[in-house]
Length: 222
Ligand code: SF4
View 1 (tube, rainbow, N blue to C red):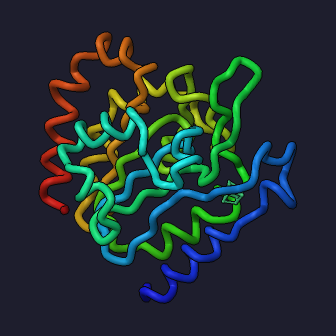
View 2: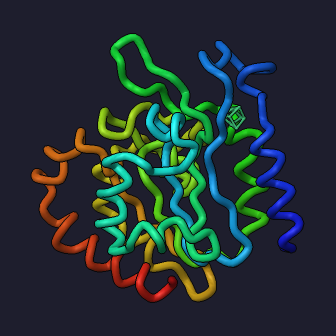
């Protein structure tokens, strides 16, 4: 794909108002502020859930404690993390979706996936590693179904797939990571939120086995 194609997509996403002007259900409770980073050259994409309020306010992805933890998991500095020539950042929803009645973040807007994601990933065929974070991203990128409190509700997953928890999906990380030659590798992660501290303590293999592989793969590709 050409740099012009990526630039046009990025510009069209920045101007997107679907969830305000033509939503599938209730409109966004605030003005859209899409946050994503496309790239013609990055070999790594961070494929997460949706911005929270702090990212909505900053307009920059992962400017919160979850971002600090994710950079630590990947073993990269903020300078590398925010270098669009090396890392693309494409969550399942580009705008902060608002809060549910319990004060938790709503799931990523389904409109986003329907409007943008297939086009975006078709425009970035150079990707060699997708770091896939949380249930909705697992469902889209791994083609299965994930759920559970840690990830929030996974929306819009393909029908007929066996239901898998985030824990099951992440525990089976070696399958999607060991892709055939030439295919983009996928590495599923839980969300790096502090809410998952208990999950991380309960699953020590995550830090002992998966994170060293993540850091090595990132080091090889940046
Ligand atoms: S969430 Fe996605 S589809 Fe909805 S307004 Fe934002 S960019 Fe557009």
